[in-house]
Length: 177
Image 1 (cartoon, rainbow, N blue to C red):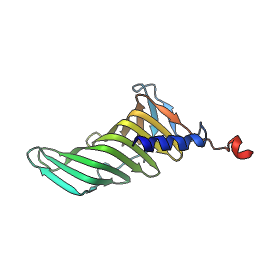
Image 2 (cartoon, rainbow, N blue to C red):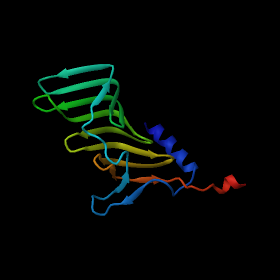
Image 3 (tube, helix red, strand yellow):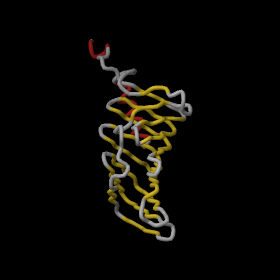
């Protein structure tokens, strides 16, 4: 995943700095950068479609473990990971949360986010991605240690060591020569 991040950052740098990534400092939240991510209102009550190579269910702990090329689709959001664990409520009638690890990619519309792991709290409509987080929006990118996505309004807070590479709308001097 480090190679993908390096290649994306290099690609973004080749198009110049300062540009189209929607971000703003949020002084009311914990120290970090707030960005728009995905739909303005992700439907967290929509059905969840999971595809994997293997499924192990543990009724005593109210969990299901999906392994092997796992793809999770809910509404307009798609999550890819090698390992996803689903946690059900005590009655096993509703999903409380999901944890994906081993290199996670989330795609929503034209935006993508990568991280080492992601925790999706369906009850509170929040997803937290940690470990070398990289978000790409068109040709711009932002990297951080952690990203907390509020799915009800489509905002994300990037915290930790935040680095932003932005694409300009104009041509570079090198192109004009």
